[in-house]
Length: 497
Image 1: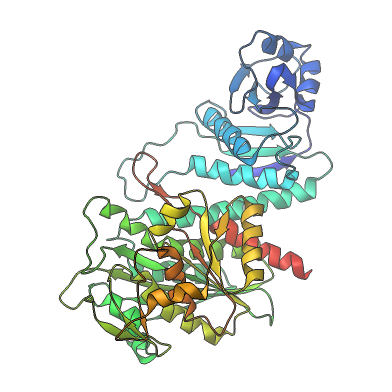
Image 2: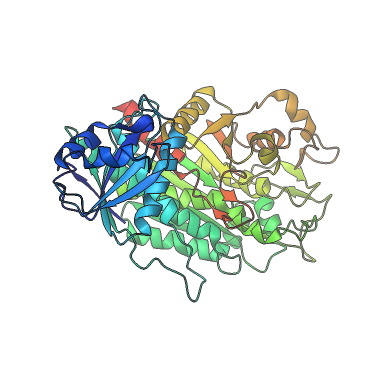
């Protein structure tokens, strides 16, 4: 969909539909009140009949109101006049987009910047509306022979600007770029494992390098990884017929600044290896590459926005399958860092590929390193699907990511990374075990990774609960945490200016 900014009033805007806010108790927003005057009180008369009460997400489509240029007026309930929460705003945007998309209107203008949404600025409302709209309109079609598409979809959405037109134009660009990044992350996460292989991801990275001149892509094959000593990563791919790839996307927009390195787990299918997962729900294990998908999405978003920053995306990619040559419980492998690892559970493979990618990241002399991974089911038990788990070896980095989550409404919650948990990874036969027992599974997984991050500032995002919706009609990738990652990078730029 296309997005624009307009300065025309609701009564004079030439579009298929104008969208105006009403509140509970029949109260009109300032825009609705002005439009009501142009319509000789017609809007207030309709409200007085009680067809819409103003509760959040209620909609009422009016046709051919005298005194209004647009043939349609969509009234949308926005709750209490004094203000609403971010969740309420997303609810009403969802209702608007669904109503418009099922109508004959192909373009509309929203007059909602006057809403008080937890004191968020108008720019936030615009960018959030775009991301929400694109999520509602998203349809996965890549492997469907006859996708059911909307007959007259909404194609153009405009936002009213009073005296802040430049700021809102920038907000539309930001929102659309992030939404496009989320779309790519969803598409990659939703593709089946027989299509989205490590080689497929490598080709997507090559395509991004061709699309954006600021991005340089490098792909390492298994022989090159073996020469670097990546025994931990390569131990996972031994059970698969699909060769592993180490993908690097280098975005140069910040001159000589040290880069931010984003390391995304790229397990394109996770059967659990010899420690085989239960059959029920195993189809969803194609989503185990959503960490890498979020890195891909973030890279195209920042490239679209031409952000003045250096960012390197590192994606270790493999499958985890059972095979005669696959890892066995009790095997010991040697990582690129030289540390030996006892594999007690072959289904704890994500950390085995990430640890070598983290060591590899040292060569970029990074300002910070952030890994993103669907790492543990334990994080879903702890935090559910609402918030991403965050652990870090530097509190300032943790605080910056928490703030980016608040700013983007793509939230994270910090968990401890204390030395007391490290002893759970003790091994009688190697430097470290790859699991730490039943207790604090998400924390001990991060403790494992922390053993390979001693030379740089690092944070870990466990997105197992937030990157994917399981089961039912909503099953699929969410595109998170692309908004948080892009917001973190934009905040970092703003802090330096």
